[in-house]
Image (tube, rainbow, N blue to C red):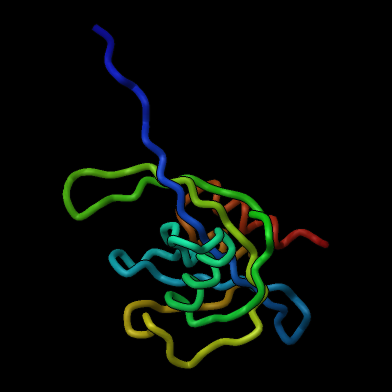
Length: 144
């Protein structure tokens, strides 16, 4: 008898919000997670009737209070292990869509549950934990 070694991977969609700073340098937005306070990007589960870019935009609004235009195709992806309150965990594949921020709200659905802050891509990459997300954010610091 052989053990079943298949791993279930769950897909999520995320926004990588960005904007130019007054000096023309590109900045990306990070938010804190609700539980641990780690720096992350807005992300969430698929929603019935919504595409990946639409979910990413919705999560950016709810979690970070930003509105903008998402790209049509992912700029990349990363994996992480989502820990649940119990002892179990799951592997998630996060498809990341760029989000060019056009409006930043003073109050949004998760205003009291999260902190948001703008960083240079290099500073943002240094603050996130996931290696693949670090690399993805770091690419935004490259000349375009």
